[in-house]
Image (cartoon, rainbow over all chains, first blue to last red; front, top):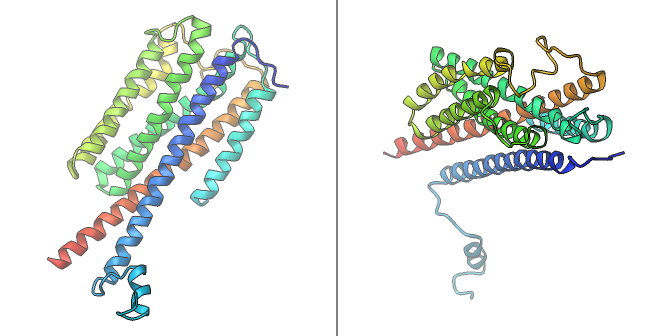
Length: 70
Length: 225
C-alpha cells in the first residue's frame, strides 16, 4: 500500500525529474540514431544511382501517361 | 545481448525497482518518505562513478593505441555519466531540503561532486568543440585528470566528518542497514547499471554511424575530385 507521508512531494518530485530526464535523453538518442541512419541510407542510395537523374513520384506518374497527358 | 534486448531488460528491472521503492521499502526513520530518494540517488551516483571509470580506461587506451573506438566509448560514457551526475546533484538537493533544511550547502561531498560535474562538462565540451585529431587527445587527457576527483568524492565523508551521511552499503560502510534496504538498493543498482550500459551502447552506435557516414562522404568527394 502506497501510504506516503508529508515528505511525499519531495520524493515524487525527485522521482519525476529523474524519470523525465532519463526518458527524454533516451528519446533524444533514439531520434538522433534513426535520423542518422535515414540520412546515411538516403545518401548511399543517391550515390549508387548517381548516374541516373533523380525522378520524383509525381514525374513518374505523369511520364507513365505520356508527355502530353495532363 | 543486442542493444534492444538490453534496453528492454533495463526497463523491466527499473520497473521492478520502482515497485520496490514505493511498495516494499519502509520509510527510513527520521527521514520519512524523503529517505526513499536514496534508492535511486545512491545507484545513480554509483553509475556515474562507473561511467567515469570507463572514461578513464578508454582515455588511457586511446592515448596508447590511437584507436577511435576508445574515443567513442569515452565520449559516450562521459555524456551518460554527466547526465547521471546532474541527477545525483538534483535528487540530493531535493533530499537535503526536508532533512537539512537547505537545498545546498558547501559540504565537502557536495562540493567535490559539483567539481566532478564541471570537470566532465569540460570533457564533453572539449570533445564537442575541438577538432580531431587534437580534440580526442585533449579530451582523453581531461578524462584521465578528472578521474582523480572520483575517489575524493567517495572518501570525502570519511576524510571530513560532515553533514552528508557515509556510504550505507559497501566495504567501508559503518552501519548495517536492514536486508530489505540492501535488497532494494542492490536491485536498483543493477537496474541503473543496465540502463547505463544501454545508453552508452546507443551513444557509441550514434558515434559509429556518424563516423561511417563522414568517411563515406569523404571517400565520395575525393573520388569525384
